[in-house]
Amino acid sequence: LQGPQDDNWYWNVGYTYTEATEVNTLTSSQAASNWNNAVRVDPNADVDEKSVYAIKDRFTATVSYRKKFFGDLVSSAGLFYEGRIGKPYTFTFVNDANGDGRVNDPFYVPNKGEVVFKGGAAMEQAFFDYLASNKNLAAHQGGIAEVNGDNAPWVHTVDLRLSQELPVYGSMKGEVWLDVMNIGNMINKDWGKIEEVGFPGAFGVARFAGVDASGKYVYDFRTSDVRDLTLRDNR
Image 1 (cartoon, rainbow, N blue to C red):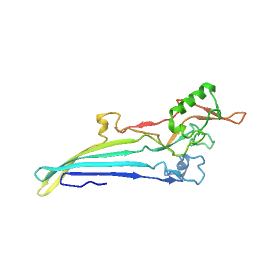
Image 2 (image 1 turned 120 degrees about the vertical axis):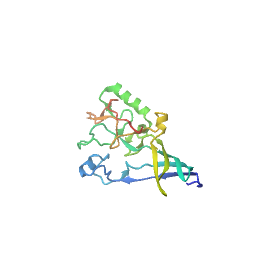
Image 3 (image 1 turned 90 degrees about the vertical axis):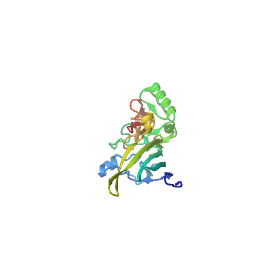
Image 4 (image 1 turned 45 degrees about the vertical axis):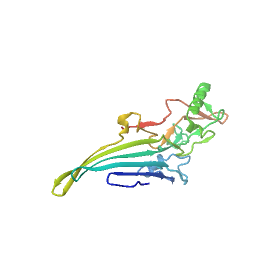
């Protein structure tokens, strides 16, 4: 959507919606790395999953002001806003659960009593307390976490550009400009931050510790193992 233009003001707003799936995440130039970094229940299966690169919702807006304060030389100031949903990620086991030598296995989120915890009742309680605090993880309870089925928090950034035309020679002009990226973070350190799950989009929750005599899975849950979201420096 673009607003009416005059000699001084200009604005537009936009929205992009994306749905994309992929069989191979193409994380690397080498086939082995592509296979290793694919978070899948079965990385050998020819099945498409939600893309780790898809940004489902993205809003943009621009506003600028231009005026000739010095003869025919244009001075301008503009702001660009982007608001987008965070990058997709998958809840996974912290270790190699299926024994293929790679740590890329989606996490099975158990109901109480479905699995045994290596640390006994105290560890079990700690796990379910954590589960109660993580609504995204809890949404998968009783099944395997969906590949790239969750998203990091929304990101909001504002960039500023100031520019000025300058005389060069005769009718020739030059231009100097100053770009300030993520200017909101200069006002408030909590604005414009990006929180996301690091490459390759695997959010580790607990370790798979085998199977007990009754056939139940054994989990080893330690809060120090939980990968969680990390802050990417965007200041």
